[in-house]
Image (cartoon, rainbow, N blue to C red):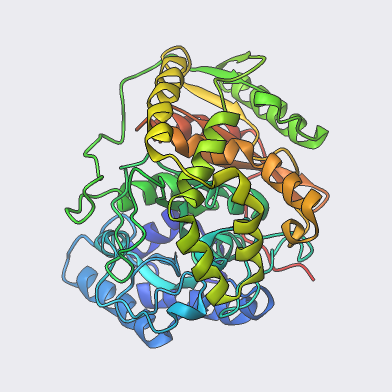
Length: 463
């Protein structure tokens, strides 16, 4: 069987479970694909082929014993270089952390292993995972396989580029302000930022930056099909006591009317015509699939939550973050911090948390009337690479366009990027948002949008 790397995770798992393909064959094909295309895009920055094959052989041995290897049994996946994987450096894109070797796995890694996944390699991110562009001084630049002139997104840019190019069937990412949703958008795949508390995550190697209610960082999957996002979410969301913010919420919530609020221009975003057209087209796909789509003039507030989320992210410990960035010397990280100084410093945590409660109530009331909100991922098509470092106007342009991504995490809501097609060879997509722990509604709507268009497929990197 040729081109195993092209298959969905669901298809691959089925073939391995039925013994039509061995896990070792799947791993060998994944490693060959990595060798063939990763030099062009630099998505995977650390991997050990012998370990990958050993993981796969263990899956094959378990299948031979008649054991259930899990929903991802034998499926090659990638993980982001900012989470702990035993024996690997948790660099987070930093020279400063090149020797920060994890002594144990993050719960995300352990839960992927429990689901039978084979960890293929570790994917690139910008320094400190700060930016919507993926470059750093330790691992170098990641290129977008669709078009090397545009950003692969960030901070999970390596994850988006890898899964788009067929390096692994699912990619793990993390998202504070769009770091899963934007790489999915930029690379033409799908990506889910789950509800805060859905997926357990903890880094013993880097305990100084908590994953919890202050910065609202969560782990989640990127994949080429919504079905694979669904499988990965179930695998990643298993219980782990190490994360005190993990919540035992069911993956399927109560039935709701299939009612969608569609907003083309949320809170003064003023998207470009191609983005408006993508959202309108997704609304038509949902209508054809039997959803009631109601266009609304505006959403609950986004601009204030986006400003407050930026304060929680960068303002909490700003001086320490700036000092670390100066020691690292990374130009992109310094641009991010210095460009936001007036916005985030000084920082009033109590005020931010008080406003979060009020704004979250407003959003939860909104989702009493609608199952899903359909809106842009970004106000623009994927940016030219490194646009935020060009000048002050470009920096402001980037941060304005990303309003829908930055705001949603402040309320702890789930957000799903669904790739809807291409403008030339530039990807475009939409964002689906729902109430807390209602990823199931996002996924149901996402499957309808996906089914109404051309499915995403693994591609060879563009020249």
